[in-house]
Length: 231
Image (cartoon, rainbow, N blue to C red):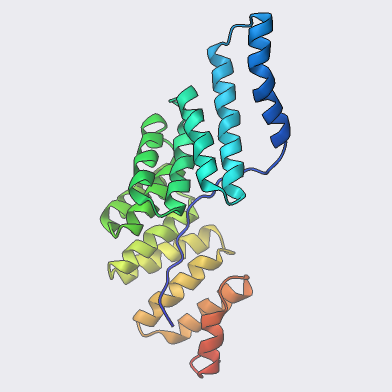
């Protein structure tokens, strides 16, 4: 079995709805401006930027990250202070393995909105992917300070502690994540790996069984049962 800690990044929300309607808006709006002499206000630009961001998020969910980035680039051109646009583009860059670009975007989102716990968490994930666990932990700390009930940030910080060999700290974070969200399968699964490192296989079996019951990874638990490690 290969050790793999499951890390959480907040995905782009939204559904693929009213895409055609929004597309029609973009086609008609310039015509209205030309024929009726309407002036475009800053509020209009901000609204259009939000629509472009929504389209970008939808294309990302449809598996078209490059097209999604094109739309979000346009949103940022219209409204350079739209923190969510940088954050969303950072998520897309992270999914493409472009971690440096993701970090730049998350940093800009945090600069605009310093209270965005999710942006700190996601930048921490990007730092983790680069093996920079100290910086990752610093960002998870910031996310948890803003939102102490942020179970994903606790789990992610636990993962970085685990990679550093700080197993007791990792377990404490997984425990807190489970306390905050008793149905958090990934926290059980990751804690199970730490119990292996500590030689507590009975606890590993219990955690992996629970993760499996919650609909998460069952393969390792089934292998452990098959080999007689778990009952």
